[in-house]
Structures are given as C-alpha cells and as structure tokens.
Image (cartoon, rainbow, N blue to C red):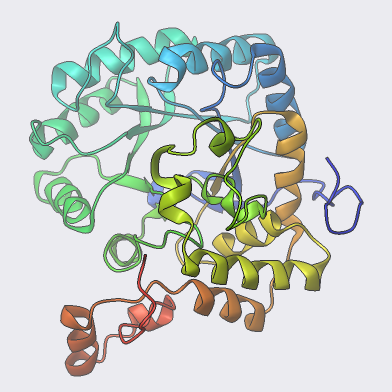
Length: 363
C-alpha cells in the first residue's frame, strides 16, 4: 500500500526496536501484531503472509485471544508456529470470554480450562504472556491471581497481564498480588489513542506508579485516525464502519463529534509536515506516551500491515507532540483532579497533557 500523502511506499525500519514489557524481564518489539482478524476478516493464507512479514521486520510479539473467531485465531497462529518454528517470537493470548465450547470467567475453573484450551489450539507448551481479558465481578481477585500463580508454577504460562480494567481494579490487582505474594501483572492492555484517552486520569498513572508496561489496542481508533471518514458522509463499503456503522466503541454516531474533527485536523497537519499518512502520526504519538511498551497493530491484509509498520520510523518533535496532545485533551472534572493538583502540587495529569481546567469534554 502506498502513502496517500506522498504516493511512495512508507519506510519501514530494517528491524523494529524493542522495549521492556514492564518488570517481566522480557522485551518486545515496539509494534505487536494483533490477530483479532484471523479466522474472521482474514483467512489463513493472508494471516500467514502477515505473520511472515511482521517477523521479517523483527516483530517479536503476536497477540491473540481465545474468543477471537471462536478460537480460530489461536488455531491459525498455532499452525503458523508449527510450520515456521520461530524461537524469537513471544506469544500473548487472553482468556475470560471463551469460545462457546470453553469455560468463561476469571475463576479458577474458568482460567484453568481456558489456558489448557489455548495451549492446545496454539500447539505450544507455554504461553509467554497470558492476559485476563477483562474484570470478572463474580471471581475474587485473590482466586484469579492464585490460579495464575499456580499456572506459572506449572510452567503453562510465563508472565501475566490484564486488559480492560479501571484504575481501582488495577490497584486491587496489584495490591492483592503484593500482599498475598502472588504473581503480579507486568503489562496492562487498554484501549488508548488520540480519540480515547480515558486511561489517563487513573489507569495510566497507576501503571506508571507500579512500573507496568502499557500495550494499547485500537491505536487508530477503529480507522478514524487514518483520515478515511468524513463528518458529512456515513461510511460505506468494505471498511469496519462501512459494514457496521454502530460497531463498538468506534461507532460512527458516537465519534462523529466536533472534538473528533479537531483531533483529525491537527493529525492531518502534522502528517503533512512529515509527508506521511495520518495513521503513522497517530501510532508515533502513542509510542511517545509515558509507559507505552508496544502498540498493537490489527490489519485485514498484509498491505494494511505494511502501511502501519512504517509508523516505527516516524520521529515527532516536542512541538508536534504538544500540538497533538493539546488538540486531543479530553479535559478532566475540576473535582477531584483540579483540587488535588491545587493542594498537592501533583503534576501527573499536566505531564500527560490532560488539563483539569480544560473545557474540552470527551464528547
């Protein structure tokens, strides 16, 4: 795929740089290949092409989940692993929302069955990074962490993380692990992009305070940050929103707001400065945010993957980062954040570019 701004193929580094995955001792490439499309929007042959291309750039982590395409995503990744036998690739998968034939939830029963099923589908002896896919109100945190600790001791998983949690939930996870001497998470996997900075008031500061790595999903906001949508024309055709305008958190009616277009205007301007597509700049902004270890890329085709890999070679200067951060600042309620800043001198939200006094609301 060519760069829509310059008409040239975007430059991809010879080898992707790596960063630590929190306190795990592992390092991963700054871009991770997300396999959510495998078995659903992407067939096996195309998935193999993506996996081969990603690995050829030094990409070192593949992220999937037991719930993607009813487990077929894990099966495709497993067949690729069996065929290529790479020794330089980390496998991350998630459990909590299992396929119909599995066992859902983050209870001991649910996680043990989910991990065993994922190992069978992936065809491996151990999962490098196993993430709980979301909070389970019915499973005590100590039970979930105790189960993960036992699975690490059994050699079935090496490191653990969590996806889709609030700040208080993350604090409970970390505190329980510390007090009960259970395996702690090393990474958190949230939605994070220029259009959704909802992790910044609580989740991101908690990650920074505890040294956890952040591996964001949806860096392009479901396609919004590629510049392919417009305010006066509903999406159509073979795009995610063209096929389903009400799709999840990136639904057209939910994101077709003045704030969204302010962000996209700023993004487009910085992209023009670099002669790059807007998506490169959106990913580069994320890679420059505090705590971010690796950004998940999801693609239907190898051409889309190729386009996104070029983001790794973008270098944003301080002024460009500031322009994007200011344009996308969601604003914070004056209480308690503004008051905390006033009487404690806490600078974390200012450092993150989310001003408590901003009148730009998330809508």
